[in-house]
Amino acid sequence: MFVRLIILIGVMLLVACDGGNTSVEQGQIQEELKTYQWRLVTTWPKNLPGMGMAPERFAELVNKMTKGRMQIKVYGAGELVPALEVFEAVSLGSIEMGHGAAYYWKGKVPIAQFFTAVPFGLSAQEMNGWLHHGGGMELWQELYAKYDLVPIAGGNTGVQMAGWFNKEINGLEDLKGMKMRIPGLGGEVFERAGGTAVTLPGGEIYTSLQTGVIDATEWVGPYNDLTFGLHEVARYYYYPGWQEPGPTLEFIINKDAYDALPEDLATIIQAAARTMNHDLLAEYTARNNAALRELVDKHGVELRKLPDDVLDKLHVIADEMIAEIPGDDPLSQRIYQSYIKYRTDIAEYHEISERAYINARARPVN
Ligand code: CA
Image 1 (cartoon, helix red, strand yellow):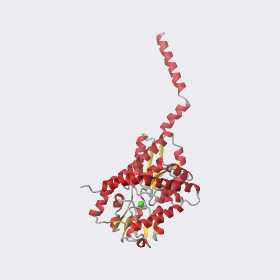
Image 2 (cartoon, rainbow, N blue to C red):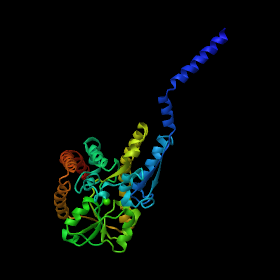
Image 3 (tube, rainbow, N blue to C red):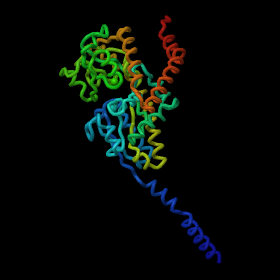
Image 4 (cartoon, rainbow, N blue to C red):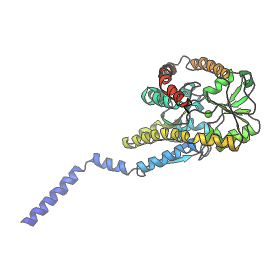
């Protein structure tokens, strides 16, 4: 009797279990077993320190966080698509994901440049504030939705250097007729100052400068510039990087690929990208000064500050020029207005916070 009761309870439990295993639960189990294999193309030379490694570390992080459900293979510039065709490839969906910088797409989407860097614009810290707590990201998403892309901030180098020159810059007239690799809005300012701006991916800079295709270049800052050996082909290293005060890099994801992800994987992608966005800035902050010392002390690079009047004139040109970028396009106008309002507001606050503190710390006290 007792044994039969036990068997009966056992059967009832089995029935209950089977009955509870609904198609919804089976769907969830299947979803958890499903793996996603994505390709990620970048605008950077393969394994470039800093920005080139950010997508590699991102892919590793996603793999670990998803226990292998999501596997992302990273390709350097030119391995699957050329550096400057990353946007197109991901937009069309032939590749799921990309890593680069929005200003490389200025020929297609001029206002996108505001999501990388604006000359005399936001610093890295300010940019992160605008994007993630100041309405910038929503505008970026709205802009890229037109191209079936989902953007996520993907790193920041901090303030860059003004660049590498083979002659001294004493006035704006020294820029006239000069051919310089300087992408984005900085390049447009440079053109208005009388130079010729060219956009070249990182991998082509050294040879172009060495062979005289360009007269000068900006790239990033000491940490990356040392790796490229730019000190071997240019004598003067100028600062500050007025053209890129806090350039934001980007992850871009094809919208169909992103929408096909279950919610947990999409959340992990967002969280891993945010981690890389902040970690890259930390890496540049920690590495730049040691690299600068090596450039100056070991390689004899001549460090120069751009004269104040040159910076002031570039600033005036920049403010005039960026006001023309949005044109009549309503979304571009909203992006411009949001950026400028935030810049005005944060600049006022940083007078009494960042600048006041840095000035106080710099005062000699001994
Ligand atoms: Ca740069």
